[in-house]
Image (cartoon, rainbow, N blue to C red; front, side, top):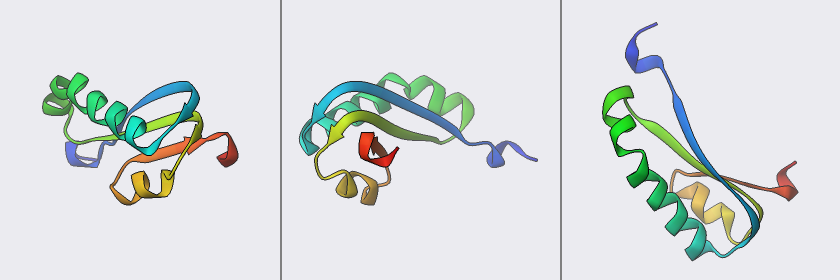
Amino acid sequence: MGKDAISAYAFEFKWKKLSYANGRRILKNLETKTGYLNKKRGPLKFGIVARQIENKQKLRSEGFLAYDLNDF
């Protein structure tokens, strides 16, 4: 299995209700925080887990992973 086959994930967990805008901001900040890892390991997948996320389908359509308590 080559380097390109490795997947890495970066998640942020929040125990609150998030609006779409707050979720997107958190995910974009997570991309910035992990910029060094992204260059060293290859592409990362970014996600968020929260108590509730408004319009999580829109975040998913943008390529993010988004889960709330309704998913578990």
